[in-house]
Structures are given as C-alpha cells and as structure tokens.
Image (cartoon, rainbow, N blue to C red; front, top):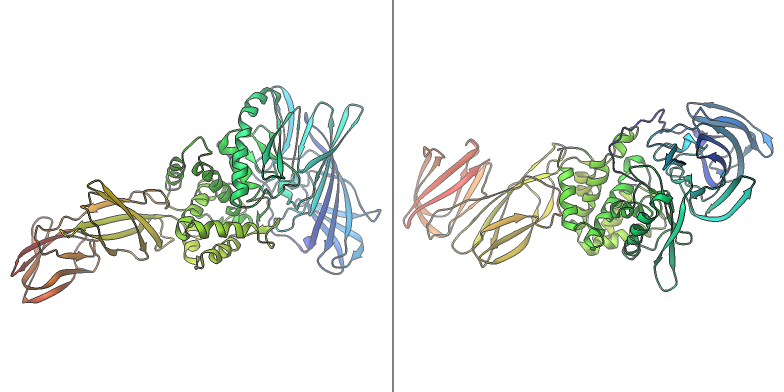
Length: 614
C-alpha cells in the first residue's frame, strides 16, 4: 500500500491478542453480499470452512465490530448461540469437533460498517456517481465481515458474490466466473483459488468502464491486466496503464513468475490518494508509474508472501519501495535511478532516529510510517545489496521467493535474513541489528594526506545520528580523482578512526564518499591534511586521532627532538630524543580537541606535520 497525501489515522478498539477460540485453521470463505454504492450498508452471508487445531473444539470466534447485527448463525443446520462484545463474535457450537475435522459455519449479518484505519468501508461519489469500496489493511476487515483477522492463517480460497443495482461493475479478487441479472439487480461472482489473508479481501462497486492490457511472460503465457476505471478518466488511464507491461516482465524475470498467474492482475479506481494492493486487484487513486509499480510489486512482496506480523511490515512495504526504485535503475521510470536514491536518502536523514522494525503495532501511523517503514525500509535493502553483492543478493531474493515454506504464506524479517545469509555465506546479524532493528545512520568525516611518493594516508571517522547503534560496519566506496584520473576503492570499515594507506599513480585532488549512493548517510566532510615540504616521506597515522599517533620514517633517522604546537602557535609539549628512530609513538589523550602541528628535528632537516585531536 502506498498513501501519497497527508492524512489523519484513526482506529478504534485494536485487539492484537487472540484467545483460544481462534485455534482453528481457515480453509475457505464463500461471501454473499448485498450492497448499494449510494448507501453505507451491507447485508451478508459468510460461509467459512475450517478445521480445529485441537480436540474437544466447541467454540469458534471471529472478529466483527459490535455495530454489525447478527441475523442468525447456522452450524450443521442448527441455530447457534453466540456472544458479541469488544468486536468479537464468539459462537458456542452445538456439537464438539475433533482436531483436523473439516466443517463449516454460516453467519448471516447486516449493518452499517464503520470506516476505521484508512477507510475500511467507504461510500462516496465520482463525477456525481456513487461508489463503494473496502480497504481493510491493517485491522479493518472486521468492520464489514466476520473474519479471522490474523496474518499467519490464510484461507485457502475464496468465492465472493456481490449483488448490487444494475449499471454497476464489481471489482474483486480472482476471476469473474458469472454475472446473473434479476430485475434491477446484478450478482457478480468472483472466484479466487489462491491463499488469501483477511485484509487483502476486497470489492469496489461503481459504473466502471473496463479494458485490458496484456503481459507476454513467455512463449506460452500471457497474463491479462483488467482495468476498471471511471468513464470520465478512461482516456487518461488507457494512456498510462500500458507502461506497466515492461515493469511486470521485469519483476517476473528478476524474482519469479507472477504468483497468481492462473487468474489475472487488475486495477480498480477509487477516491484515495494512493493505492492498495488487494490480491490480484489493486485499488488505485491514480495511474502514475510510481504508484502502479509499487502496488504491482506487492503481489510478490506482501500478497504472495505476507508479513507474519505487523511489526515486520517491512516484508511488504520496504520491498515494494525498492522494486519501485529498481524500475528507475532499469530505465523504466520517468525519473532517474540517481534521483530516486538521492531523494530517499534525503527523506530518511531528515530526522536522526527511528527503526524500520515497528515497535508499536497498535498504532496505524507507526506501522505505516512513510519515512521508516517505506523509505528507509526500501533503502536498507539497497544497502544490503551493496554489502553482499549483486550475485548473492539476487540469488537470495529468488531463494526467498521460491521457499515452499513461505510460498503463499507469511514471513518475518528473520526468514528473509536466513535466505540472504545462505546466499552470501556470511553472517548478517550485525547488519540487521544496525539497520533493521537499530536506529539512525552513520555520518562520516574523512581525513587524508598524500606524500611525494603518491601514497595516500586516509582516516575514516564515523559518528552516529542516534545513540542506538554504536558503529555501522560497512564496506565504504571512496572515489579518488585528480590530474584527469580517477579510481574507486572499497574500504572495509569495521571500527572508528580506522587508518588506511593507498598507493595511487596520480596526485589526488578530490575525494568523494559513496558516489553511487549505496549507503544512507549525510553531512559527509572531507578534510585534507597538508604535511610538511620535507622529502623524507614521513607518514603520520591516524589523523585525526583520539589517544595515540604514530609517525613513521621510511628509514631509521636520527631524531634530536620533537615538539607540539597548538593552533595559536603555542608550544605545549617538547621532548628530546637524540637517537636513531624509525617510529615515534606519541600519546595525545591529554590534549584538547583541536588542530595541532608536530615539529620533528632530525639530522636531515625539520619535518612539520599537521594533525587533528578528536
């Protein structure tokens, strides 16, 4: 799901802990609904097939808002007693079931649904014509039908029959297998034969126009894209939806074939400032590349494999954001890959903290935090790709997509982490602790100098935007350029104030950290340390330094004495040596933070070296 406009999120009576009454396995829903898009009301009959997960099963629960009225409940052709409170429907079964025994129950109900969350059940108009739609993510399905609203138990299949006034079309999951007309009403039958979770079940009703786009996947398979659009926007939609064909093919080639290939993909227009990835039928407020690519990506990441908890909503939204960005990398988007990365890094670093992992699943605004769940969620996938390399990254992604334990089911971040670790043959615990569970991002200060032999001395200093992470261990790409030459060198940066010596065959004039924007960072500073004019090629490391500085002479040199001067030229330390030396080790932990000059008197002349105390 992607929400574009600014909005206020309100949700009432969120319950995320389930009682023993939910100890059953969903098998199938048959939904028979009567609606009129001009009236905020639904009348329905829901048939649910289920199997208990325990013996002596004699009570079953669904979630349903208390405002909905129960007409009757039938189990084995008998009326059942029930209680309804706190948005739970608890049904006392007249007969006891054994574990794994398949049975069904019928719930007849009606009422005026509320519009919790993002607007779980809405009636509105477009161009003066009534429209009705549902949008249940994350907790809104219970607003309009009795359901088991958990993420880790998908119904194996679904049939939805929607009866509505003639002149309307009904958008829904799966394939239309029948349309019946009786007097001034039509009943549309949508059949879906893939596992589906409650929040992805949806319908929309209005006077849609209909047309198809087609995606050739291989020599034998073409997938239809069914478009339901407002008549007044038909030309606009027809001009834009074909752009999704190349994106569709790219996703299939990169990860796996479209997961619901035996049915269809589709769009249904609705009055919303974004989109919602209802399984096989995305609801869209606009037909732009950015939105269509994001919602299509969810069919793989979110619908086929659904987040196993709202705490791990990254499994849905972070991946959809990154795939949307990859369309720019492939040249399929109206914006550049570099623009996409720069904009996202800028958004993430507007604030210092915040975790991609959602630590408050009772808050809809926290679950769907744009900066953290979406943008940072997408960019840490990008950074992971940099850390392990393209080959391991895409192998891991395909392995994750084709894991039979996850297929058409659910996953958490640790499931994805395991696949990526297997692909790269490495431990990603630190990476996930820093970037997924942790908060903030690194800020870099680079200090460099170059002697007459072209060797470049480099010190990498890192601070963190938020105290939650002590250090971000990363391979850092740094570009050196000068005299018409340039080279990119990758430094394994695993500790602060790490020092490196690089041999280059040109005089360096400029240094740039991460020129291709793989890493989330901001406010990088690059400082050149200008050393003395001595021809002795003295190397001072680290620079800047915290506690200890080492001065290396190329050969043993007779040192008479050395001194340290502060930025005002005041001598603050002096020591006499009068001996052959190749290395001087100097403790500077008592110095204040600032800039200093070290003057070394030798038998071959005087060396002046600048350094920074941190």
